[in-house]
Image (tube, rainbow, N blue to C red; front, side, top):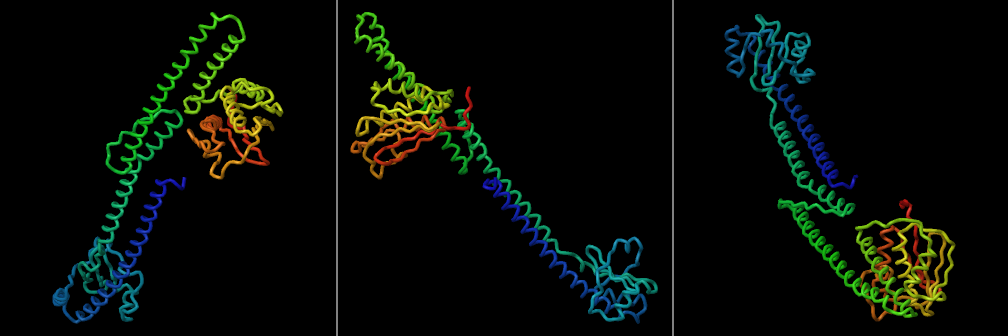
Length: 418
């Protein structure tokens, strides 16, 4: 979950937004302190001017204050109720007699959103002196914060919208892996993800064409193989009963069986058909493999404990056949030893060690030919590996005491019998 690119982008923008909020809160606190300091200074200067105007008569007093940039009005109750104290604490730099007057309520220093007010409650008549626009707070921090917040949210939305097709690509690929059905994305955008989408569509289109060509090829080759077999079988009744006729009957039967086996093998290795699971007797599978290879009894040394395995018996016989064929082909004594320990079946043969560059993984690649190497297995190991992968079985290899040992572990806890 924490490796999701969407979650990482969301966390990045969230952290950025929180950091920006903390930064603007610090700026707001700094500006509030500067405004308080400015109000204290303006309030002190206004009180000084008021002290200078005390000896004057009221009309002259109004004129004097107006000349110094202040306005005077009657302290209406409706207006007073809308005002709030300018300071939480009486400024320390004010003279003591001013502080006393503020404490006693004879002087009130008030403010609203824009103006600073000095309310002389005991004057005759009471006066309200106004310093216009001195309490106005700057708006640029709020405007900048809102603008950046909107820009961040817009950028986040654009990035998520750009990356959202990744979910569609993931769903399409997952559907193809599970159902074998690919739905073209057909993106018309011009960003990098759209390029990936179109490249995937193109690759899957070519892949589908290859699969269709593969099916057509297999259909044709199976038809071409079945035709001479059918002709041969139709000719058998015209032959006299003899040993040659019996050999031909067995050969045609085995060839038909091999063709059917190849079709099923291709379906399973291509993923178009799931293995048909059932309980299989390893001895029966080995006997079937031995019959398909026309081997004598002394070519295989069996040591089985009789534990059945859960697998597709038809294709597992192909696995055993190829392992036996490879073992005998590259054995120095023309013999293979097969032993079983529960779900583990070991195929071993005596022979020279492989060159260092030869590994089970490299020799399991399709169409691998190393003519200079006696241990080249061609398609055999590739077919074995493909069938075992379809079963979620494993194949291991080791060389010990002069023997090549291939071990098939026929164990998959997720298998359930039909």
